[in-house]
Amino acid sequence: MTYFDPLTRHVRLTDGTIPDAAAVQTRRLRDLEGLFVDRAAERALMASDPLVYEVHEATDGPKEDGHLLFSTTVLKPGRVGAEYFMTKGHFHARSDRAELYYGLSGEGMLLLQTPEGRVDVQPMIPGAASYVPPHWGHRTINTGSEDFVFLAVYPADAGYDYGTIATYGFASAVVAGPDGPRVIANPHYRPPASGA
Ligand code: S6P
Ligand code: ZN
Image (cartoon, rainbow, N blue to C red; front, side, top):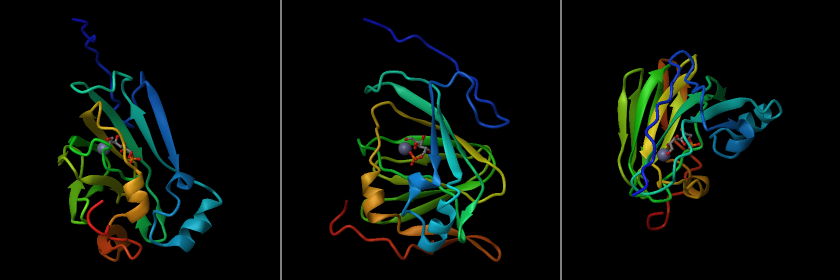
């Protein structure tokens, strides 16, 4: 038997970074093209192509059944029109793989959706531990005025299916309303004919 060595990573609570991160993924507005409700506002902001979020991947452990991976997401504050900055959102390539999110700083929402288009929204604040059950697509949204940072822990073989969200979208979007964040229907959502 070959054993994988235990390890510890320091997650900085001040800004969500992981000093010994194996990798840092950067997502700018260009990487989210076509995902926001207000396409004119999206085009207008594209000229400056702002940083929307970073993913700090703690380890590069084996992407195999039985292992876990963990990372932080640092989602910047900002809006495209009335809609808050958000992650691309994905299903897991192995869609039966679950995940746990833990809010570290700032405030946001976790938007979840089944392949048939049933939506759920979980508020996320520091200390909130939110469960993403198997088969739910998931996206996070920064509804605050500071960085929204959370830790994600997921099976190493979960993988990513971005295509389903890119094709059909989420049925809901989160926008700034007069009294704070509002969940609205996404006019661009195209329900899958018989589940994605
Ligand atoms: C991985 C987990 C997160 C996201 C990250 C960025 O399963 O859900 O680490 O990858 O929040 O979101 P996205 O949708 O761009 O991967
Ligand atoms: Zn995930």
